[in-house]
Length: 329
Image 1 (cartoon, one colour):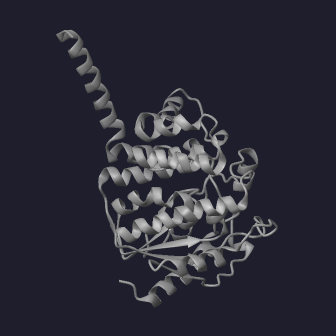
Image 2 (cartoon, one colour; image 1 turned 120 degrees about the horizontal axis):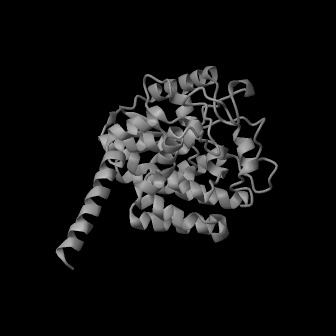
Image 3 (tube, helix red, strand yellow; image 1 turned 120 degrees about the vertical axis):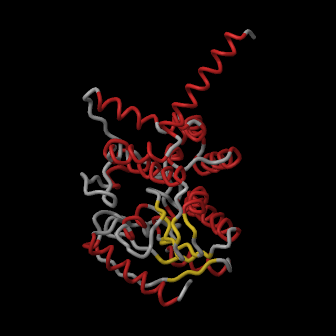
């Protein structure tokens, strides 16, 4: 190979590396994306992925004794809290928790993790395409993750998402392509929108029901309830082991959702989440489980599981009072 070829290769690599550093490897770029891109344009999961990546790039650390963790419901519940800063990832079911553990350990210096779990977390299964929105993982974890998703729903469930999942995990340019597409379209005066965009707990933007979204983009409906439960429980158990290895105690509080809009009880294999979580706590010394007997009326929800401001304040106070009674340091 002659010097011209080597120089060309070096120049291309240098240019690609420089572009990646400027646009994808520093916290300032992520702050710009978050400030200038709405949830309606890029979707709520990708937007939350930007939040998480921003913290990882900046090496910012949140120090607190107790950290709530979970789906958007947890973010909705604690978004105005002056005492607890949550790690929330939109749409996260129990299966996804172990894949958020690395972000938790890098963002939070904490001794206790609080999980707010209900039927939603145990019986919901995401479409495999949403794997791309999870924080990046090592090679072996990616392979294991994809094998698990195949096992739960079969390869047909992937459509064209199998290689898509690999690409977005190792090529940040690919993962955030919709971010740059949106910015480009905006410059051209073209409006961009995500398939499921509006999201109540971050901003008061145009709202879209999750049930309506599921009708348009069904995810786990064809998967038996018993299979979904087994899938998510394995994820929660894996997360518990990761927290135990890190010296962090896991505390589960019985969650709540709008039962007037979602009802699992008419399915034959349904087991109430309080029974499942009681059994889980009995099998693992590393966790505690508490049912605070939350009675949340439908009027305290804005949809299937996100709380109104009044409902969030009421439930948060009950949880915080319980945590204070435990005197965890």
